[in-house]
Length: 276
Image (cartoon, rainbow, N blue to C red; front, side):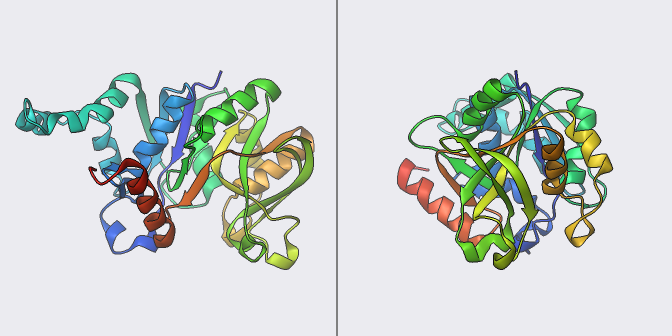
């Protein structure tokens, strides 16, 4: 039922300067794969094969990555290096990739609104590539959320517990638990100070959104930092219908920070071994 996944990838990645001065942060590698490829693989695992990517200036490397490199493939054809391209070749074969640009950085809500031209009037997933999610015990996070959508047919945000003194970094939800790990959202606050946070349940970069979100974003006023916040739009949607928050199974690494990036690299290195 969820056929498209939106990847907002227009941000500057300033926390990784100067590395991201000329390279998209979504192309930063964890071992031998860029962050955005992990996100696309997670979407494919969830049965999604249409990838819609919001880019900006200096992001051409993303488009090139999900395309055939004839010169490179010719050079390594028949060599021991050729199998290293197997995974990305499979993605290029299985998926379609479409792109549009976010000209100005006006927040995640604005980026999702720009994606409307690629999504149309159907439910869709959203993956923030610098939130790397791994579940070694079973289904990927997006796969878990797609199955939940099939049951409830409403917008869903992924959440995790964070230290109470870190709520200022996240959108935070409050709500009633309707089944284990699933909350009906009654309140959402964007980056509250710890004293103002309703809970320590923080939203991370995985969403399932219904198409009415586009109209809601258009009617939502700019919030913190003058940006269109998806948290504010979802709160408006929750007041009219139902928005769920899901405490997912697995681990999330904030690869938009140097600390989280190193943590994710070490984690995957220990899982996959030193042959990468």
